[in-house]
Image: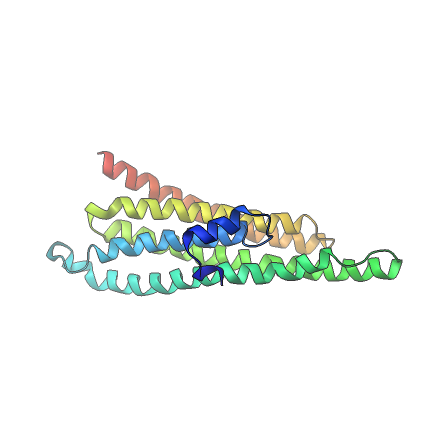
Length: 209
């Protein structure tokens, strides 16, 4: 499993010509690191008298953040699994009309499957951004930079995952379905990125006051 590899081994494979892991897996990892940084803010805050009034909120956020971190790490392997049918479809024969028709059919389904991984990543990352926002607002001022860094990483994760959807929808013959997928990706990316950028700017401004 890619998520169990060392950082060095994972990035070695990422840099190779192997089809997976790719942009989707890298985006999932970025999201996992981002929410982990959010959780770091919680860990550095709970137990401090100054923040006693928000401790219960922070502990609740930390539990959900930990679940999301693990789910995003799982997404690294899930994204690779979603890409496998598409990789196999590329190698199907297309000499006769029947073979071409069958390949088109298989490709269309494989392209849809290949979008499932990135969509899962984007949805989880959007939730992570909302949690990081609360960490930034309620957590220790001494650790707020980690919340800002987490938001920036999650923003990158969203944008990276979206590209893995667009590259697949571009090849879909069912343009209505492709448009629906792109609209969903646009909404997740735009709303999530805007929120992540807002968190980052607020954190930066608070540090530089």
